[in-house]
Amino acid sequence: MFPWEHAAVGYILVSLWARATGRKLDGWAALAVLVGTQFPDLVDKPLAWSFGILPSGISVAHSILVSVPVSILVVAVARRYGAATVGVAFALGYLSHIPADLLYNGFFFGNYDVIRAFLWPLSHGSESSMGGFLAQTWFYLRRFVVFLGRPEAWVLVAFELALLGSAVWLWLGDGAPGVELLKRSVTGIRRGVTK
Picture (cartoon, rainbow, N blue to C red):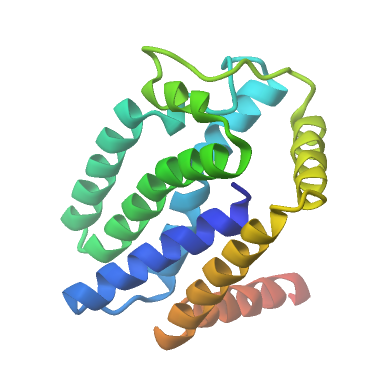
């Protein structure tokens, strides 16, 4: 799955959780879900593709044997510091990544073998070449473009539009959390540069 798809899936889950529990999402929760949804790829892909430390770009951080305890720890620490919503947002974002990858790889590309990667260290996914982060990213982008040329690609395009549209609709309904945090950050950076 591409980063924006993971972000959309995670945000949808967090927004629905917040609505079901009567919580309000703020900028920190929006940032936490964004980081959580990207976390497995930010750990595994560079360690496999650029440094050759991991056998696959889907391994340690994608493993349910790692992601579940890490998520529990993050929620516990966040709760201890009075930021339970932020902790849950990260955890839901992180935990949404794994089934989303499985669904995406299996349904759209027929690669159900990827399920082994989610049980690292007991097993791991297909070996990744250590061609570097940019080379691997280019490989997946090319594969995606080739897939778009197939007749059944309309299913993916419809899925993408529905997924992204749903996430944006919920985000706007939640008051666009994160925009104010972004504005404050940009203002702070601008002030720091102009001093």
